[in-house]
Image (cartoon, rainbow, N blue to C red):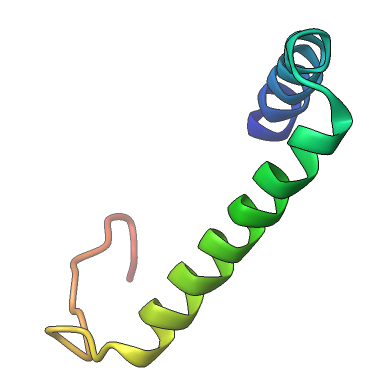
Length: 62
């Protein structure tokens, strides 16, 4: 369901952005978005979490 919502939003957003912004302007924006996501993944991989292990109770288990 989430993938469907993201696809519909992406297609409609691309249609509106394509009417307002030229392709030469969209390429650097897309590149910046990809770099920002990659940088965030790299930071999350490098930073040590506060708790290495989390214990939580599950329901219905034996």
